[in-house]
Length: 324
Ligand SMILES: NC(=O)c1ccc[n+]([C@@H]2O[C@H](COP(=O)([O-])OP(=O)(O)OC[C@H]3O[C@@H](n4cnc5c(N)ncnc54)[C@H](OP(=O)(O)O)[C@@H]3O)[C@@H](O)[C@H]2O)c1
Image (cartoon, rainbow, N blue to C red; front, side, top):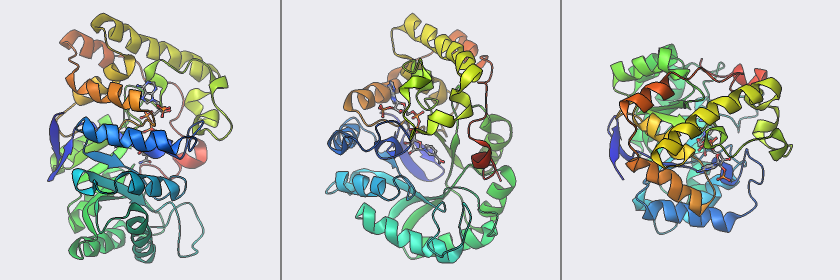
């Protein structure tokens, strides 16, 4: 497995997203034993970058990751996130006040069973707290050794610049895949200018690009995708055609669509480390093997030329707290 630098943080260039083990998708939380095996298998395959968040579950995903990493903590760069749960009683979808960050970090450290978090992301920009105050608090946590590096998620260019002026930002994590190209126009250029790494989340288009989702009947009501605009009605039918194009390239080279989707992302730069999510051993093996998949210039050009997916990435209320 090749490694890259997210600014000054060395990670395997394919990581593992743990969210779906406890949260977000049909059947989440159904088989913790297989999820733990999946994390262990990822480590065996050379994955060193594990992603979780306080809000996944909530809390139980960090506990699961903490259990899985017992005795193996030093093998991974451990990333988690704060800011979508308020411990201060403040109403609203976000709370990145210093008081809340302090409360959140103690909980995450306890659940993860660790003395330090390698990469601590603000999960969404908080309209109620100047980013300078949040990052000032994070810089104190770095100085205290509780966190190693600072990250932002779904932040816009201005926020990234303001945050970076207070303390170096190591990585920004936003949705990016053949299904969601939004970061290319405004965010990636700023990250490259400032030498900040990029971590694409949902790099498989929330499963869509793998070709295994053919009907919305596959989702139970707790599944994030059940009311996601990309997965509903005519958008779903349109987006199936994009997944088919990815599958066609996979057939040409004798690999899987998931591997093509990841290989395309890896080809976008050595500052990019996607974190595909799975709770199954067989799929972590498949996804990790994308490290060795080579796309020709012609295949890359065809994939890059695919039209954007139809439908917003999130529901209207979720969209309101993104890219600030
Ligand atoms: N910062 C943020 O706001 C944010 C938001 C969303 C996600 N994330 C992070 O990004 C990680 C990845 O994103 P994601 O899980 O939303 O989406 P994803 O990686 O694009 O796709 C995950 C989905 O695809 C399925 N899948 C995985 N590998 C597959 C394969 N080879 N073949 C067929 N299906 C496959 C998974 O099902 P199975 O589990 O059943 O295999 C799951 O339903 C998350 O785990 C989380 O850590 C961050």
